[in-house]
Image (cartoon, rainbow, N blue to C red):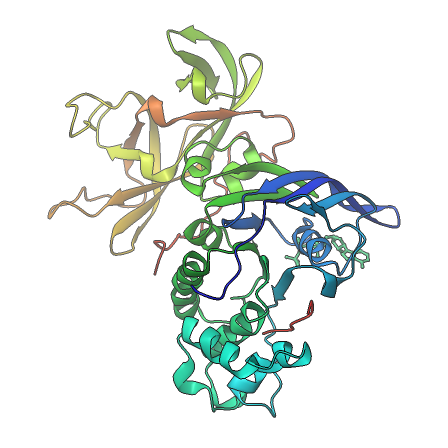
Amino acid sequence: MAGFREATGDLRIEDVTKSFGDFTAVDDLTLSVPRGSFFALLGPSGCGKTTTLRMVAGLEQPTSGRILIGDTDLTGSRPYERPVNTVFQSYALFPHLSVRDNVAFGPKRRGHKDALAMADQTLELVQLQHLAGRKPAQLSGGQQQRVAVARALVNRPEVLLLDEPLGALDLKLRRQMQVELKRIQTEVGLTFIHVTHDQEEAMTMADTVAVMNHGRIEQMGPPAAMYDLPATAFVANFVGQSNLGEGRVTGRDGDFVVADVHGSTVKIPASRCAVTDGRVLFGVRPEKVHLGRTSHDVIDRDRKVALGDDLQATVLDVSFIGVATQYLVQVPSGATWSVYEQNLDVDPIDLRPGDQVWIEWDPAHAFGVAAEGAEILAGSVLADRTIPTPPAETPQDATS
Ligand code: ATP
């Protein structure tokens, strides 16, 4: 969009550590966010996401390490000296000012003569120009959030930081705003860094997701690739659901690593297995697993072949969720696995709790991660029993 300055370089965080007394909140973090991309820092509460964001904003200083945009070293500079703005979860709009004046506040303070025109242009970008005369109290939560985004964007930062910006919105509005934020980011072409603990939100919006745990990045990459092939047990559990089983590598079969998981033999593509011997944590996503009445009953519809690996299991629970049915089944290790079957057939497999079934999957979809450090209960866990919803469906302007 005309008038918005493009970022002049990648944001680079180099060997950054932040300690509060004896506690290390961010632990030797190094990452590079390509200019103009939508980057999400995803992780559980307390993993160090906000501290990282605050260091980029200049609201905290690293204990060691450097933060740069392009070749400019920002370390040590004050928040208002940085080409960075932050949108926080609490909108903190000035209640006595109109929407237009709220957005024009930053440019006016910096002496821009055309502050109101800049505000109008930015309100157009967030599609709120028709509400420019209203006071914040006369807006919905989603509209206030968009004013907060406009208030940050009007300062023409090179990097926009979003700290759980959708946390105060209800689910439906959050979904709408995810799409809206992505549209705005694409239109202005600025670097957006979004902090969230909501894996679905991160995956919906970001080009690149970095999963943080205990102050470190566990894995970073495009959302689809990370979902397909988690690198650690933590990521397998935190990004989507995974059916996991702890086992031991017993050998090789061509391109596959073979493992024994609680007496069952499973195969994992060698290219998808992070360990080659010893303990392994086997995993397969719930939608990659299918149910049949008998062994090898489940046939790949395209390839007309049996899917491959299977296990006998007992149905624990059946939940119809519209587009799919979720089954919870108990596998031989005693663990509960989750299975999603798309509701394609008019006459679906009629299963009830207590029924014996075979669960089957294509070994090409299996993955293996290191078992060490994984929090595994009874040898195998279902990480999360919540049913994921399909994807897609403020401010304190602290830095300038
Ligand atoms: P949340 O999603 O709950 O905001 P987060 O991943 O953003 O979590 P941070 O706010 O970065 O986490 O905090 C990381 C850790 O650092 C936490 O254990 C927190 O208690 C600690 N911490 C953050 N700020 C301070 C501070 N000023 N003094 C002491 N400890 C702090």
